Length: 618
Image (tube, rainbow, N blue to C red; front, top):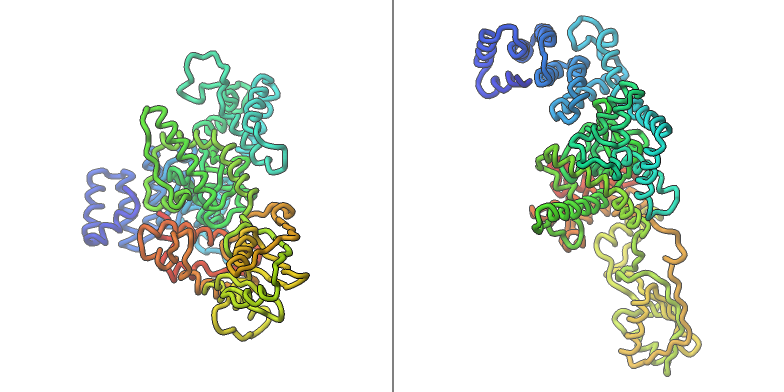
């Protein structure tokens, strides 16, 4: 009987009813695990007798003999704080069935409890197993051992070493692995950025059967196939431990896009595959955790060779929007496969404003796909890894598009314009609505700063230089400067489009400009490739960040179809893209805060918009 059933009876009816049910179960099934656990619940919840409850659960531990019973009993043990005994029960279940959701949840909670106990400065005191001894002298060693097993990657790493021995002994298999890896990397250059992909390619090749095999049909069971891991598992020279690990990798290896809502391990992290909704409590390698911010997504495999889901040799860390694009690619591939199998056209969910749907956000409230669907999705993701990594690299290497405040591609244009009557033309320019004369120089102004831009910039200036007076009237972006010189005008603007617009202004004023000299400098040709930066201004001061947070909710944003975040928060259909945008901000803020930089208070934004992250976490 599940833990908490007695508490349900107490809440739904009465303590007397709960006691009556426990007595009836004891009468009908005396000494059974169900009767003992229910009696333990009554003793603990209604009688506040933890020692009696603990003794009853110990009796149940002696007789429980099936996995369902072990998981249920583990939940009762955890309910009274006995993490070590709960872990002992569920670890055996997860060794053969790491997909067991209930066992995984109990293990995660028990490990977190053990982790918290061990991290405290003060000893917890009496042991929660009610032995009468201190925790340090009783269950502490078992809890620490469970934590060490959870973080121990030796079984995974030892399997790789065993495969290297096999490949050295089997040159034809080694040649096949090399061929598979070469096909993965055929379109890539040799550079340091390929290290992750090379490792992924090798590990993927371990799972691939020989395409030249003469067998009439593919084996139903991957353990019977010709994949290097299957050969290792069947090889008489393989140790029992390595053979078991190879079998488990084949059975419990899953490729995907694993979202990490919170990358701080305690001791593990919950990860959710954003294409299928499948969720696992994983022990990620420290170097895989390091680049992850809040809502990062880990592209690559999770494997459970010892009952614990672990990241394998290499992964690629994606920001939330990159992961949504990758998930959209996988969805298109899956649709093409379904169309090929069914002969019909599959309708796909339309993207919003040309962008991929926010798959990571839409996980909220979604049921996880079945094990069969997850295996198919894993196969598609595994084979698509080279494409996905290449798309991410191309997107990152392209960098942000350098634009001016009019949205034009940035480049510096310097030119000399000749006109028939420079003095008259200068007077007409000075009378133009967008041009002002400033100490003999004609200044061409652009659009006014919006409220967010003005408040943020003013706060930054005040933080750097102290109190400054704010000018009356709208403040505008500078488009260019025009100097009267050499019988004409020297002009400098920062885009070709602006240069053409300035020529049009001259023509509108009755002056036909003649270009006698023109120089164009494109910074994109000389600057190193730029990576995408944070979605908020990387301000140096707390004041400018506060000003940004104050005005951002009321700023129209293209990502929200021109609506403001506050407007989007009020409309149910606009909330998913707003949540996706907030996650991008949290991701960037998390990584910047780790580097000791000042960042905006994204939690404060969520409160102001009434968009709690918990509402979107399923």
